[in-house]
Amino acid sequence: AFAAELRAQGVTVLSGRSESDEAAPPYWLWVEVLRGVAASSELSDMLDELGPEGDEVRLILPEPNAGRAERAASWGGEQGRFLLFDAVTRLILSEAERRPLAIALEDLHWAPPGSLRLLEHLVYEMRGRPLLIAAAVRTEPRAMEHPLSRSLGLVGGLDHVEAISLGPLTISIIGGWRLRTAT
Image 1 (tube, helix red, strand yellow):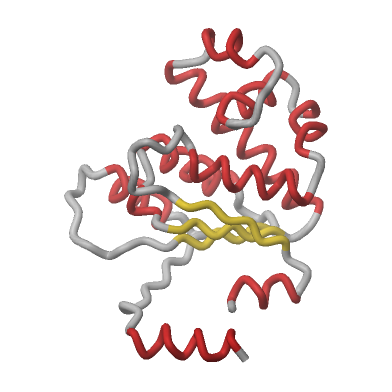
Image 2 (cartoon, rainbow, N blue to C red):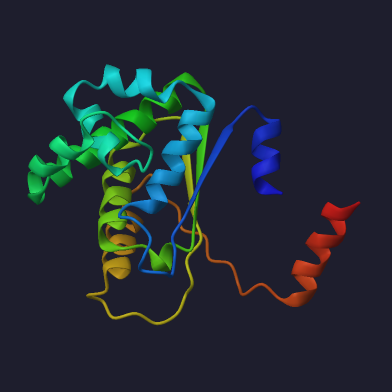
């Protein structure tokens, strides 16, 4: 319902979902978001505009890319990860400058550390941009050193971030949504 309301207001809504299965490729959450960018824009042209950093983004996309194996061999380490985060961030912010953009991230509690770090990078850079990020996270207890605790603590302290806690969804609430969407 929230996404439909945003779309009705002219906002492009992209989504990504973390998998509980460890067999998912790295950065799967962000691959889904980038596929949404590709569906609403010419992703290849946008990656070309990024220059060499666009090649970093191509590395995480499962679609075939010319020269991918050769580039992947030289990709890695903290510097490579930073270049990837910066390239994905620039791509998303560029899309947000073209039209208002919202990103819905589901099951963030299952996100691997790399995907969480990319989220941190994007949230730091998005201040003042027409971009909304909504993330669904289970509120189960976590150790402070857990990657999600770290990420939520870092971004939650930023003045342009607002955390809204919702209670658990009950069967009656979900049933009401089903009734409204079925009519």
